[in-house]
Image (cartoon, rainbow, N blue to C red):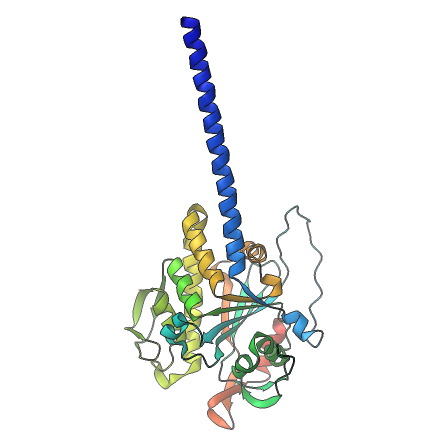
Length: 345
């Protein structure tokens, strides 16, 4: 009986180990399936535009790439890079309309920033282009096969309104002489969701803000803002002295630095649920060029910025002067504007 009891015990242990092994295998399969689904879902969130294909060779040249100092089995991009980042005043979708996007009659580039990443990705320069800048708007190809008309003295943000991302990129390249390596656009609802997924953002304002159009009412001081309030801060203009677009840009630069601080203090790698929520929000309302339209490509870009802190990011506004023809508009202040763009080539 003792021998039989031993055999039964060993057999029971064996069955238990087999069951545990099957359970572990099942968990691994489920985990792999879930990871695969998450990757597919997040990549599928991204809308892309083939800007290189649309513009062809009629663009500023790319700088010559510097040779890699030390090849790696898993290389992280380290070369200098220029990105055009737009916040779009999208008119479509119920969420965007609730956040101030208006009707479905079109869209505008509410915010435009050229982001220059230095070689080595240890420093960055963010240059805002006021949307009220009068520019030469070049002829741009349209998805329909036609083209937009050239225009002199056109409002900068009409390029996006008339010709979408392709025309926005071509107009920026015409204005700056700088090749945009990538294009990134996020709309109202996507920005608000991203800030909420990060747990909000803490900013300090030096002035009271009382703006019914952006739905933001804040006393001067430090505030922790949710997504809707942060969007209001990025958009507020008429609650500032003179209703100046330049004053709004200063607030946007404050917000950029605050968001970088928030990201650096949020340990997403130890909280997979939060990481997925942030990634879903970041990709859910994102439009990129075809060189950044997968989660892998965006992840590589993010990894290359791992050593970049908020203090390493310099924020500037393109030097401008009041337009001679309209005091409510501005034009590039030369040669200062040209010198700035030259430094980013």
